[in-house]
Length: 402
Image (cartoon, rainbow, N blue to C red; front, side):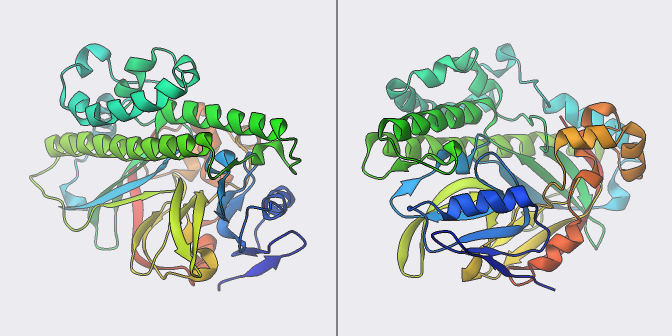
């Protein structure tokens, strides 16, 4: 059943769509709700957990200002999913070979495409329209280029790459045994650099104006300033780059699948959704900047993706447009413990047990992503039945992580 509680005592209330929330996350939500720029309330999704400054799984509406750390450093991180005409019986018997082929085509972890192979390629042509926009940003903020090694090449070579952490590529089956491809990634190194650069700039700006904040990571830019406009431009760019990154990965995965399965086509709408981003939206007849940090848009009828962990099922959902959540829902299961705590409590044998039947890495390098480190996805979904309805339930048979 849905759970909706309200945290009071700050400048605005916090509407929380779960009872599974720790003390640190509550403190962060209280800090956010104490800022004078936040209005009319903050919404905390069922996957809510502590982040850096701002809580992961929160929706933060602001008037005339934006908090860079609320967006975070994985700007535009999100999901892409497509359904194919293939069924489970069409998949190869050797799923390990399919996983290896995808990993050979899509660099994971710290790897990226080789510059010698990118030059003049389809990938280079795809990213070229973003080049002039990025040059315009870096011309005014040269520190961005200095923060990324081999800047001019890296952002191009990282298009179509997965990264590490909770990013993944999965081959899934739905309730009709139809094959889906689902992936999760963001704006890679360039997005991280843009995020860190502007978070530091906001903190410097707060010190210059001697504004006291409940947390230095909640420093913000006010509308009307040059740096505000520059940050919005940079975030828009990073969101577009993240979208292109996922599109390029999806193209590569489909090419690999075509070599390992019978002929197929895509069936239905391709679903794309950011979950670390800013949008200008109208709520309650007010124009607001809505920051979704670990949350996705769930307007009436809008399709979205809510993944579980690497051992739990995922969901294709349709939004209900609930105004209390600013037409939003969770972006996943949400962590129940830190990465360091997961590594302390579990080992590769636990990981193998919890991912039985799934073709994936089962070594110590991804123990921090073990299913037990995440909240129960079924409980998360039950808490947001007022926000979304389930359209498809997916279970992964192949999971690729960095």
